[in-house]
Length: 289
Image (cartoon, rainbow, N blue to C red; front, top):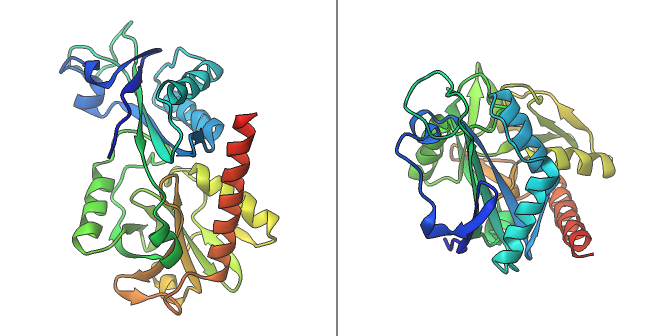
């Protein structure tokens, strides 16, 4: 993974090798921070405003003050692309923590938040998009505030690692028999021409791509139901797919070694993929003018 040389630290630009923080940094010691991953296509952000809005919602939820306005931060991120002469497909990682202070569970007083952002190359995985992926199911043991995009990701990491060790791409998480989401993506079931996915409650992350998929479905006259489905429903699905900024809209063709329908990406998934590609292209053109 290639990291571009210029990074954003606080509100200034510097070389990636010059960024350092004290060992008493609350993101490192407590996971006391929030983050975003923003997709880049042909050197332009996709869903930038949506990601910035969610970043501020997450920060407000954990009582971290972001001193920059949304407009100021957005301009800094666009400037970061320009300064790195970024023209390919990639992703931006942006993290904000409560800052650096002597270790204490109580919030420090008058300590500025730490913020940094960097860009890496991230080519589209066209093989997965065209052929689909295999996933596993895992019990959802995460905390009750999953709607906050926080740094507390250890349960997600463990689930994702288990999936990898079993030769799968992702882990579908379930709680009390009902599917919530995946370790790093939202998940959807298609049955009889309708889409089902967990409601946007505190139990899941409200994905920016997820919100776009709901709009795509409306535009295509496909019923989109914010209605949970059970682990048992998976075996009866006509289609399954997942979504995230890095995975886009990826078909799921096998779950726990059990084939879904005919084992190929379904019609509705393909329609949504086409809408995504068109929408991303529209966003790219709008930023160029």
